Image (cartoon, rainbow, N blue to C red; front, side):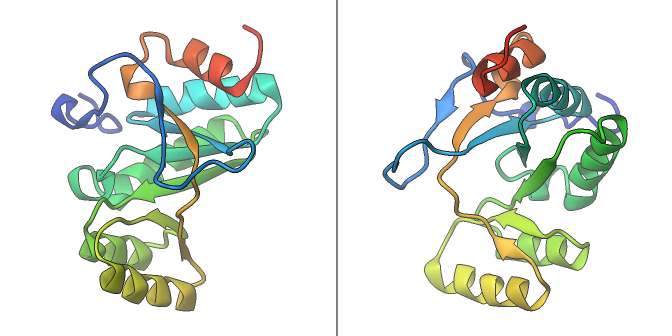
Length: 164
């Protein structure tokens, strides 16, 4: 476990890599997002997006704002972007059902967060985020969690639709 690698017990997806569906019904093709749990996976995702010549949405693991922290994921994203400046990438930090973690992430400069939980707490955090030029992301992505992939780059290429 290195500095930019979360502890193994916090990686999601012990099973095979696969798609995770959101709560909303799909309307046409859904935008794609890749869940990453390490710098290595983020770099693999960016290489795949570069090969496919597509913009990329990278999401932290579920609840990463709590177990790894917003600064950790910001560091992963900064390093990945520095190594692949040619790829347009949006970063989404998952705060699970923890509005306090979302507020902490906003204070650290995060602009796009995922937050579950109660409607009232989400509304309060959304209002604060809006005042900080940030937002809660509730997009119904088609998601591939690279934490379960034996070969992250290959899985990302297949998911994004580029050839190896």
